[in-house]
Length: 224
Image (cartoon, rainbow, N blue to C red):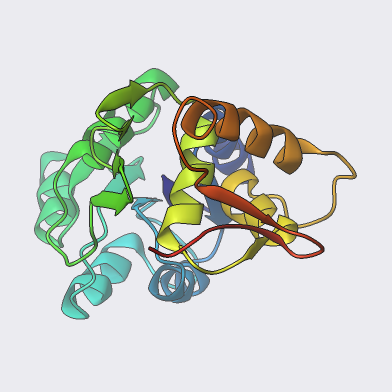
């Protein structure tokens, strides 16, 4: 999933980001509430983890503004405000879950996964199809010609990006940013390696290749 973390404590923010990235998520970290709201409106995120006490704009105001704009991205409050009234206020603002600091990352991870499994009340498709392949973004299941395909988290994220932009070329830089959250050239062949592994799973065992290399540009899945 693509996740936005709005947390002003650098150590807590880094801890959350590292853990979520290790699980295969693409994560952005913002330390200011006002900047976080702007990022939330332009970033097309699958989920947000938000502190309540933030500089610039508090977490409750962020969520109320998003809900007022019909943005239904799932929001998990992660905050030191753990009183009953605090929880009620946070959930009534439009948040989907509430976790109190200090917290165990295992519980945060489980809550993020649970929110990711919920059907979203928006028009974004959760079942992607291309030729004889189906990709379910909720169950994380991929099939081709009726056969299950077991993908690792990065492979799944890579395939998701290509299918969502079928017919359009995704450059190496675009894939590094979308899948690995890398905003510089790491001088490695990580993209090429994962494309090769993905092809071995979704192309080689089947008739007709889905992933195309556009020399000098990048990769794409051709529109039907």
